[in-house]
Each structure stands twice: as C-alpha cells, then as structure tokens.
Image (cartoon, rainbow, N blue to C red):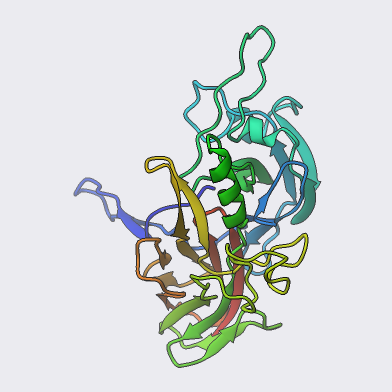
Length: 352
C-alpha cells in the first residue's frame, strides 16, 4: 500500500542576490488545504478468493470544501514485467478507456461492497498464472512482501486523482511440506485491521475514539502532546481473552474462536510466518505506523510508530503546534500495520 515517507520539511529556494525577496515554499504533506484521499481500508483486512469485502476511503478536507465523488476500480491484470511500478500503469490513468482485461468498475461512494476475484491468487499471488494467447507456459508467481503477504490492488479516484489501495490475499504459502502446511494452517490467523482506541493529551485529557463527538480544545500556538493508544495484543494464546490465538480453535476455545469466525486483535498482532531461509515457521510481531494530518498547525513528527524490532508497546506520541488563528480545525490519524491493515480516526479541535 502506498505511504508517504519523511517528515514535514520547508524548502528554501535560492535566488540571485538581486532578487527583491526570497520566497519560502512549505512542502508539508500533513497539511490538508484541499480535499485529499488519505487511505483505503478493506474489511476484513485479509480475504480469500471469492470472499466479500467492504472497501472504504478516508477523504480529508477543510470545512466547507467541495469534493468530487469517489470512483472505485479493481485491478484484474498484473503489470507487464517491463514496468517498474507497483501495478499496471493503465490501471491508474484517469483518461483510460475501461478495459475488462485490466480493470473492473466497482461503483461510486466513500464505501462500497465487492468480492475478491476467483483468480486473485494466480493473478497477484503465489499460484502460477495460466498461459496467455500464444504462450506455452504461464508467467511466474508474484513474490510475497516481507511478511509473506500477497495483495489484490484496488484504486479509488477522487476526481482525476488515483489512490492505490490493496486487499491482503489469503492464498497460503507455496512450497510447504504436507506437515508444514498443516502446522501453518493451524497457527496462522488472518489479519485484523488495527484501531486507535484512545487519544491521550499532555494535560491528562483522554479522547476516546468511539466518542460520538471526539474533540478537544487547544490554545493558539500551543504545543499539544498527542499520544495514540491501541490494543495490547497477547503474545501467547489464553482462552477467554477474546482473541483467537494460534493455539486455539473452535473445539479448544469456542468463546475466542467461534465456528466460522476468528476474533483478531486490533493492535500489533503476533502472526505465524514461514522463514524461507531457515525453512521453518516462526512467530513475528506486527509493526504499527500512525500518520497524522491536519487542516492547520504543524506536527513535530507526522509519521510515528512502533516497528517490529522496537520494544513491544501499544502507543506512540507526537506533538501538534496549534495555529495562531482561533477557529475550528480537524486532525486525522491513520493507523497501519505491517500486514496491510488500516483504519483511521478524526478529531475536531477548537483553537482559542
């Protein structure tokens, strides 16, 4: 999934000394001055071919700004081997003619329902694709990401601007022995979207993310500490904790693992991963990344999180400097995990 790296920076243009002034251009990717599509989420966060998924988009905009409707499309063909991008470039062109061999129109709106194509694991996963016309053999399978994941691309057009999103595919792991395949199937749990449970301010105020009117007040030019908190996921399976761990199933712990469903954790989950180097299955912990946006003010760090190699924690912190002008502003926090899960939270701020 596309993310934007780097903190907010100011670029100073160097002009000849004879210039009357030297303008400063602020390249602050966290500042929302016009409608922008920030993130795409799938529910569930991981799905098998033919499964249904709900897709939603986060569009951030200043108060009163007019915005275009969102048009959704599903990529149905992988990119040519000669292309270096993430997907087929025809899939991202706002001026293209609809080509069913490349894309499928899903509909319009901030939220839509769709299904994972039946051939997703051969088009974008570990299964070899079938031969095309004039070919003797099919192409090579797609390589997994560092977490062992494969992804079905989707795109949301806000007007003519495309934003690429993905649905993590449940395709299994190629090359496992029969015993390893059984073990991996017993231990692996599909990904759950992460979720911000609460926002803690420096003055001790706690802003719950499920509040109907999530917001707070800040003084002009004040430095406001923003600490996002998410669920502390268990590192070992315990029946009765509400999470279906890798050592639990519908027989051993029906409460955590009801038949036909799997209760995941909305924080940094532990997941089974096949190490191709050691040729063994081991447990890993997801990393969590939180990206901040606002209609005014500035962040000390716009991208903060807890990496897989960091000490285990369920919170991260940044500082927002309120603008000098009083008024109503909006902050957005987008939370992502290493396996493609994403969700978001918005907060209204009254600057006084």
